[in-house]
Amino acid sequence: MRFMVMIKASEDSEADVEPQEGLLLEMGKYNEQLVAAGIMRDGAGLMSSAKGARVTIENGEAIVTDGPFAEIKEVIAGFWIWECKSLQEAIDWVAKCPVAHGQNHFEVRQMHELEDFATEGEGYEQHKKVEAQLAAQKAGA
Image (cartoon, rainbow, N blue to C red):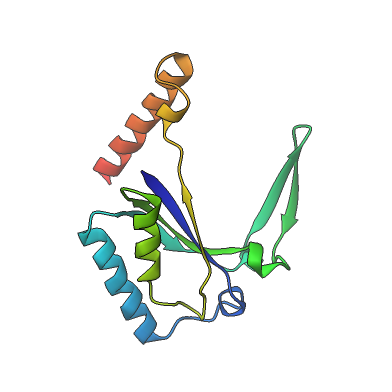
């Protein structure tokens, strides 16, 4: 099972306050544990919402709202993609995370797999083709 673990924003992350060296080291060690356990597939911190935009599509037209966004609780400051045996395993790993920027709010969401929707047909084949292309890109990187 794949999970996206989202780190919610804080006032510090939205103000682009850089984490102290000690925290960077702790997070690096934590990420190494995730990799060594075979759980971490990807992850990154995100710049503040002031450097982003929200896009709403209405009747085929893109409506852009530039950041920053007022509701910090709705902003994501970073993410991981993990492969875990269960939601509980993902939660257990989140509980071990060093608290970054005073943040203590995370959201864990299981990701759909293609097989949740289909195992045959043209749409299935198209998605399998894209997965193969992505795997080839990663292998060549």
